[in-house]
Amino acid sequence: MFKAKWTAVGIIAGLLAILLLQNTEPVETRIFFTSLIMPRAFLLFITASLGFFCGVILTLMLVKKRKP
Image 1: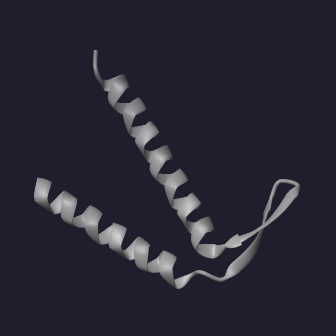
Image 2: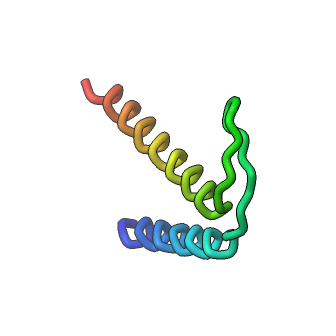
């Protein structure tokens, strides 16, 4: 089970790396009242990182609630 988990993490990380390398063109992004121009790969990296950290925080909160 442990090996399968790390294999899945490795495959997902590899797919994310390929996705980031294929999207290097600049894109305009509107965040609230600001407009930013950045590479699409950077935007995807930021989005993936935010999702990862939100998942970690949520997991830690749920595990903390289960312990008496």
